Image (cartoon, rainbow, N blue to C red; front, side):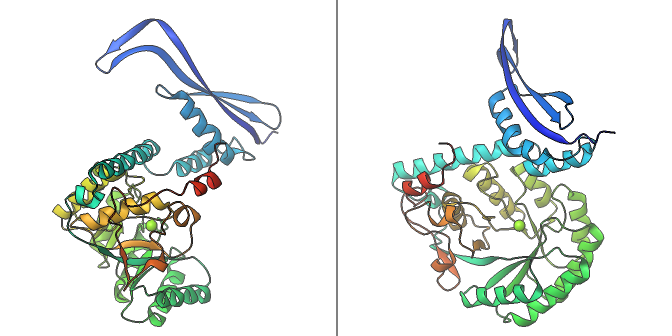
Length: 375
Ligand SMILES: [Mg+2]
């Protein structure tokens, strides 16, 4: 019997003009577009699918061909639910997320443009609270053996950080063991926090969260999958360690689910994901209304995202702490003509906010040529 090993996936965008167009409250439609999907197996079978690609069918096809297809090759077409979960994870977050990321790129560019036109940094366009420097925490001690994690933590302390985040998420006993060891070796004046990246069930998150509270940890980030808002509500009632989340949210509507019942103590929108400076500003403003702190997620983003995040951090009253990735990242370190957001820029555990017009950085076009993949 065949095991339906997938050998090829191909998406083909199709558009046809209609002889008679249609008009609805949403406008006129003169053409129809779909995306045809072809899946082939090693033993020569072919399946076809279709997805709605009404606006930008080519973009949908590109997404399927470049993001989804490589994840399916070599796997069995019988395992539909597993393949679905892998595709869902590849597209990250809630429905429509990738489009909001696309909007974020345009939005950030518009703010930069307006700032340059007015000769003012974006932080001033946002109302300007006058922060020239922002408090930082080191991100993140990687998953590794306890010995390696301890060495990393001490190395980061030596860089001058006053707060450190640790990637946890191992089985409960192991996670608590690592958290305990790190709290023992890291000097008491350095705050410690944890990022579980959705690793836990509610029960396991309660067990780890209670231990983190006992150990005096600062916050416990994304213990549960982001869509389990009810789980966050139960966890909030069960543990005293402050919870943090929001890097997986795309809009103020998503973030409001965490904010309105104060399920988190820190909300962490990523400006390059959550619709850009406009939507992230609204999330940070809503956080202020609910007395929740704003801590921008930066992660492995490039120099432009880092610069936009610093401008927001400088301006938003709810700001608490900036995520400073202490490991080198070429797209952050080379993409602007000035080094931005790096641990080497730290002064007394803080990063300076660029005060030039717009985002306050200049693009290094040599680096753009070096890293572009569309030529
Ligand atoms: Mg995180």
